Length: 468
Image (cartoon, rainbow, N blue to C red; front, side):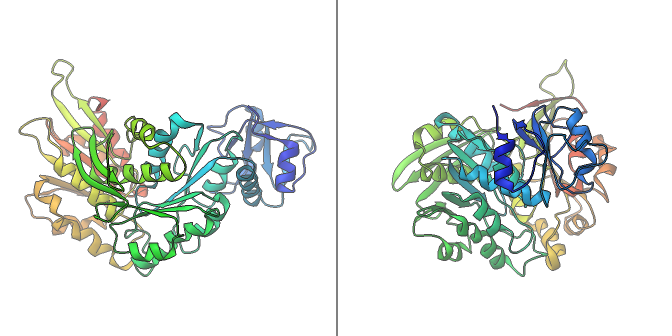
């Protein structure tokens, strides 16, 4: 299906094209580019113009460029603009303008991607759903997601993130959501903000992009809830454990690989199920249903579809590592939560680990934690503080990675201290020193800590099978 023609793209961007072409997708990476895609030559670590010739050789329908690259003929299928990122933004705005989709914008300190994926699943039975494949939520990720949106989309879910003040409002105005959700406000990116209240102000900027008559979906359980409500439009829904929440979470019962949630909406009972353990997932699921209904979806159908959701690798997926084919019951339970981390998400992961039952009566609960980045002046205290987190009472051993997590390691009682290493690669070299048969283990840390190396090393001890 054609996504962009040369005529449409020229009108959208104000660029020029020496020849006619059609594009069936939009790509920023030649490694994953498919034939027919428009290749966007963004500048990052490398200048995307260096890869235009390769993209065209792989069958790209065209390339979005700011100059004709060396080795590429002038009559090649190129869309030439003054600036590539500005051109991508223009395509995003044009794609948003030409669709009748109901758009849901999602932001928050934690849970953006999980909630986006929950919405993709919950809405799937009620129309064509468009959402980013990955965490494309920044200054190029949002326009890229919009530029990829087909005309006939019924529901679009746009994840919006930030690292610094002033980033959310422009992206929200580009996405123009009908529903804007804030999952949670928590200490994250504190290097760029004085306190959590400043983070809340930045998250509330998502409301600046709301369409007329649009709705806000806000967490009712936060210290900053009143601040968020003061910035919200008249049409708003709250969710949480608070008794006065419009969407009230009554109970979340977690099993080995699922959570059954009992809630109420304006006094009407509601039960739904999620394919992962954890109260934080229950909260995200409740927010998902609130946003889906605000976007015009049917609640009953959305709740049924939501039961099909399960977290992807790196975001809380639980796997059983079979260590011996002749003894299928012998192995290690692994929570792969390695993708990223901040204080709120680490606390939630520790709670899940503490409530999990090891596969063997003699097994331990083992946490492997890497540094949390961008926390500013209080980073040492925030790391060390997990030594007194309530979940630690039920965790047998903690391995730590990085100079910041050394503060937690030093604050732990000797009985809980496992190994400490400066890098994840060091611990990944000796997985048998971290876990043993019968353990349940959780790995988590900021993306730059590469905790996935440790997850991979543990998986390679045997055969990994996702828990059902």
